[in-house]
Amino acid sequence: MKRLFKFAGLALLVIFLIVIGFLAVTFPPIMAGMAAKTMCSCVFVSQRSPQSVRDKELKVFPGLSGASIDVHEQERTVEAHILWKTSKAIYRDGLGCTLLSERSEAEVRAQSTNLPDAPLAQDTVAWPQGDLISRRESGIDTVKLHAAIDEAFAEPDPGHPKNTSAVVVIYDGQLVAEQYGENIERDSRLMGWSMTKSITNALTGLLVKSGKLMLDSPAPVEEWQNDKRATITLSELLQASSGLEWAESYFESTSHFHRMFIRRDDKAAYAASLPLKHDPGTYFQYSSGTTNILSRIIRQTVGNDSYYRFPYDSLFYRIGMNHAIMEPDASGTFVGSSYSYASARDWARFGLLYLNDGIWNGRRILPEGWVKYTVTPGSAAPIGEYGAQWHLNAGAPGNPALRKFPGLPVDAFWADGFEEQWILVIPSHKLVLVRLGVSHHGFSIEKLANEVIASVSGN
Image (tube, rainbow, N blue to C red; front, side, top):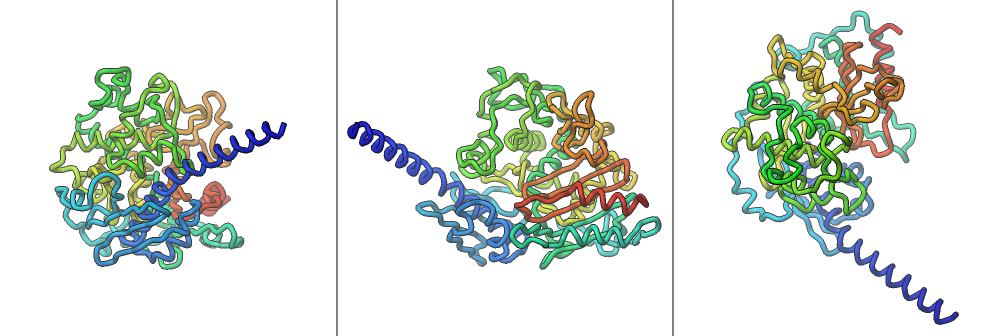
């Protein structure tokens, strides 16, 4: 019996050492990479202090807040050190920050990028193209509206902070309210995280409009031409129903998400290398991987000579998103799933474009029918919760009561991102509601939205 207990104890020790060894190998690269990239973008793109990043973003992941991080202001680089691993992110003008994984800094900095011209000043240009606001308060309960926004910034529980950075309310096309957090200004570039996926939707739509891409045609992915993946359509990528193997986990170090974001320079190549797990079009799987495949398709379709200007000349500057910036990976492809920054007003403009069916100041930007396609639930989405890179409140087929936000209208749709970034569009109330922040303990966008609805509808 003693020998049995001794053997069992030895086995447990071996298992323990294996687990510790596995964590020692996988944990430091993930955490160091996330710390370096996050700190770099927040400091050099958003112009925030390193300490504010430690106090907010780096608190959510175990181990990040204790990382040793060196911010090199002159070189505009960040190095993060966790145990044996050091990761580095670099800033480039007009491109934001890029995490180095496989390529050298010199190789990445030597990449040829045809950047856009600087946008025009907006202060003397009327909203929505510019920042000259004609305040509209007729028919709006401003006391109720501002009380709702104040509550979005209130911090009743220091242990569970909201960390709201900005709230902007657009009603009937006009900016009727906005508020900003400490050290955040009107023009501050704020992280969109997965709201970037909805930008990828728009960029894809522009290429569909020009006839360069077709929704129901097989996606032009070279790696798939000789196997069953060749049948995956562009629309199935947009609707997150490609059938490719994927695990969208932000807290699991071995997930596809972290393998792609931290360990690979070419995010799209990694995602495209994954095998089929389900028949295309039959299974819904929210996936940053497939969005980055879309981003590479956009690059290949546009061509490198115009690629880095394309989002700006064709979308951002046309609708006044003059502070928007997309960040590429080390292969040079924009990280179309996650890495974009814009001012709160810019994010509101983007929502307004979709509220207005892709038309801006009387000019059609997105293809006719594109917004309708975007907000139509994909056939594989179980409760009608996803269209084409936008989230929906449509409800389950035949049972609209079974939906994400039962307290909001069924026509509501939104872009959202990690840490509770929101562009909520509610056509039936002529509303666009933007909320940005660094919330790790939840934020009730439904509550805020209903209070705003009540303030503009007289209820």
